[in-house]
Each structure stands twice: as structure tokens, then as C-alpha cells.
Length: 338
Image (tube, rainbow, N blue to C red):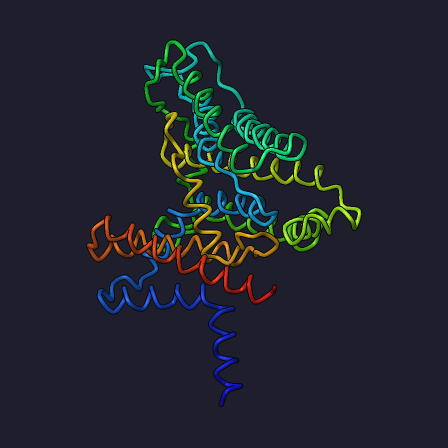
């Protein structure tokens, strides 16, 4: 009997994230059975596709034992960069009035490159200057927002929201495979799934992934075993920045516009989704399925509780309790390992 209870406890601890997700869906469905529909699943996946990409980027850094507070501001920067170059010619307030129509891939690549550069700067500050990740990324968060605001305030735009985006760009955020009904598959969801698969390969099948877990597990042991910690951190932060950059341009494509306030506080949602999804705050532990489940949990909370008319303030309280519970589970597992 004791063995059975111990096994049950281990099962609950190991699969707590998935149990919480199922319980949330069941509770909301009992209150309103119409929640269990293909349209609901379609909407939740579409709303959280870019959030999943940001969370996957944050997971890289968290697994090394660090934290990246610049994610949201990088999203805003890359949304503005891509949108500013992809407005239709007849739009009245074009960011670049004399810019000819260019291939859509150029602004997309520039946006991802901007995210990569910010990430590499973070990695350089952390790995070479030995600044704690919290302080390093806090500094870049503020600096990136300032740089983005200066760019956004350039004449003739002067801080006006950017709109009138080209259809070949917005299709990335609003297009789909199918007839447009609930059974259609949005391109945005397919992109998020492809990114998740790529990140899974990096985590599990590459030297960088193995080194990432080793650094997060014990940085001193990683040094002793011959891992170049500084170089690995440099590229890990760079990859994370690239993912934030991709998410930013996809946010612009989805909403059909951009402003310098895009992505505000997204980094906290991403970190929370990672922690709830089993990424250890002490480093060394985390999986792609766990991160995706964490994103879905917050997606179900946001969509489901709004669906049944729960106050947004209560939603914040519920999200906070889930985050605290997830961290407490993480601490218990960490102490058990010691």
C-alpha cells in the first residue's frame, strides 16, 4: 500500500502539468459544455502560437540557469522593424514614403537578425563581462525599448501606430490551410509547431543542447569537463533572441500593425509558461513538450475563464497561484535531488 501511494505521488509530481491542464478543461467544460468544441481549440492555438515561440526562446536561457527579461521588448522592436517596411503603397501615413515595394523576405530577415543581435549582446554581457543574467537582460530590455521608441518616433511617422500592411506579409499571421472554418489550420500554428520541432532537435540531438543542460545542472562541472561555457552561452542567448525576433514579426503579421509598445510584459508570460511547464528555475531541467503544455495552460486560463465570464482580476489571481504552485513543486524536486 505504501509503495502504491509512493508511486502515485511520483506520477502526480512527474505529470502535474498535464493533470492541471486536463482539470482546467474539465472544470470549464462542466460549467459551459460548449467550450469543448473544435472552434475553441482553433482559437486557443491561434492566440498562443507566437507566445509559444517566445516561451521556447526563454526556455533556452532558463535551462542554463539564467533569465531573459528583454524578450518582450525584442518582440516590439522586430514587430516595428518588419511592419515599417511592409506597408502598402497607397497607405496615407507610410513609415518610408519613398520606399519601393521590396521582397517580403528582406524585412523578415532583418527583424530576425535584429533579435539575434540583441540576443548575442546579452550573451556577450553574461559570458564575457560576467554580469548576472537578470541585470544584463534588464539593461538590454530598457535600451532596446529606448532604441525602438527613437526609431518609431522618426519623421514622418512620429510615434503613430503602423498600419496598412501588405497582404503577402499579413498572410503569415492570418492565413490558413482549409476553407476558413474551425477545421482550417492557421499558418501561424504550423510555424509554431515547426519551431517547436526544431527546438526539440536542438535540445535533444545536438552538442549545444547537451552543453546547455550541463551548464544549467552544474556550471563548475561543465567547466571541468571541457565545455566552453562562455561560447555556449553566447550562442544560446543569440538563438533565444532570434526566436523573439521571429515572434515579433509574426505578431505584426497577425494584428496587421505594430507600435513600440508591442510585446510589453510578454517575457513574464513566457517565463511563467516555462516554469509551469517544468523548466527548473535552478537550471538543468526542461523539455519542449512541457513548455508547450505550460503555454496551453495559460491559453486555456485566458480564453476559458473569459469564455465563462470570469473577471480578468480573478484570472490574474488564478494565474499567480498556478505559478507559485509550479515553483514550489520545482523547489521540492530540487531539494529531493540534493
